[in-house]
Length: 132
Image 1 (cartoon, rainbow, N blue to C red):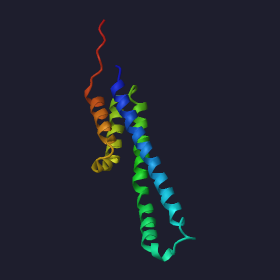
Image 2: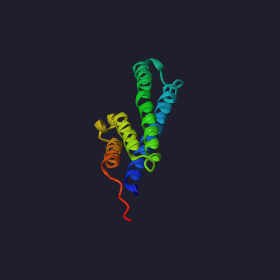
Image 3: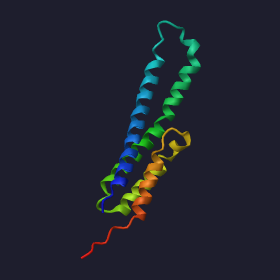
Image 4: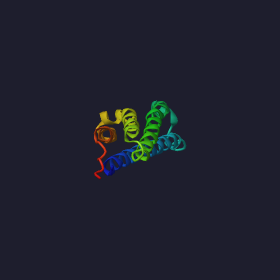
């Protein structure tokens, strides 16, 4: 059975997860480099709260980035397993949707919905019976 729709939904989902993980890493690098950017021109005592906020924020941003990386991996494994065992691929898609579900609350990304749609299609669609 051709499972092109499930593949497309899974591929778009794990590409979105990968892009979000890369974007998060870039944001952390920018925030960490901007802390020492104004050292020579402005009094650092004025930006004490900002420096503390950036250091706390950069620690907590790693949690969703790690979640995106794990969700990316599970989505990729799900896409690779669609042909061999669609039920197992559906399980991987559901676990990837659970890990990336926190992004759905922000309203920006909807890859968890894509993973859930692909998982439901993996579980519901029956293989076509071959006629003799």
